[in-house]
Structures are given as structure tokens and as C-alpha cells.
Length: 150
Ligand SMILES: [Zn+2]
Image (tube, rainbow, N blue to C red; front, side):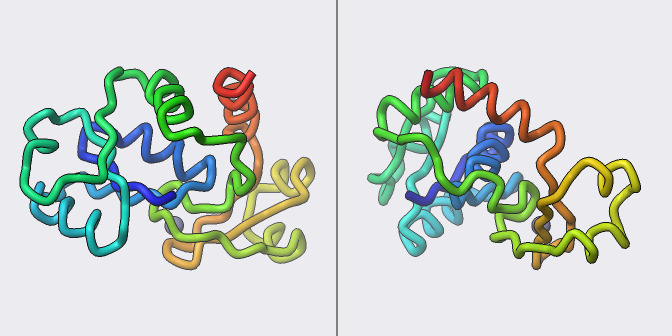
């Protein structure tokens, strides 16, 4: 399942990426371009815009009801039958690229020492070269996953 989120859903898009879902989010995208991308890349449009869903060509969409991201995720889980995701922390939060594994030795040349001392698994984004490790996002993610799936 792949998504494209409208401009109002930046936080939801970030969390979908953390959970491993391929999610396009472009802050200044026009409606036309958003619809075009959803069709050409088979992406479900996630939107809070009632005007957008009435436009021509918009068929594959989910209208997001709540403005709070955990409630938004809950709606997606129940309406799209999403199960516990298996590819968490596999994507860059910023550019949606799939992360490459990075060895601890390589990571420790770059990340702060305390990170090197406390983390073992690292990934690197091929787009922006950011380095990822589990850290605090991971704990928050586990909490949110428990809230979503019980
Ligand atoms: Zn990136």
C-alpha cells in the first residue's frame, strides 16, 4: 500500500514513513500534481480536503476525519485493515527513501559518541545521507503501535 498525503497531513506522512509505508508528501504540491502522482504511481490519496475529493480523477482516496495524527493512524488501521507493520524504521522520515544498512563501525565515525555507545543498528538514507538509529523515535513508535493495535 502506497500513499500520497495532502499538505495538511505532514505529521501523518512522517509517521507513516516511520512505520515503513511509502508515503509521498510535498508541502507545496498543487491539486493537479497530487492527483497525477496518485494515478501514475498507484498511490492512495490521504486528504482532509473535501474540495479535493470532488475533483475529476480522484477515486483512490481516504478522507481523513481527525486533525490529530494518532487518531488519523487509527482511522487508517481500521478502514484499510492495516496490520502490525513489519518494516518499521526502513524509510527516511524526510525524503521517503528506503534506508541502507550502515555498519556500527562506519556509523561510529559520524554519530555522537553517546549514540555509538548505546545503539547497535544504523541505517543511512541514500537521498539526504542522514543516519538513523532507533533512539527516542523508536520508543515513541512502540508506544503508538501499542495504542493502535493493542
Ligand atoms: Zn533522506
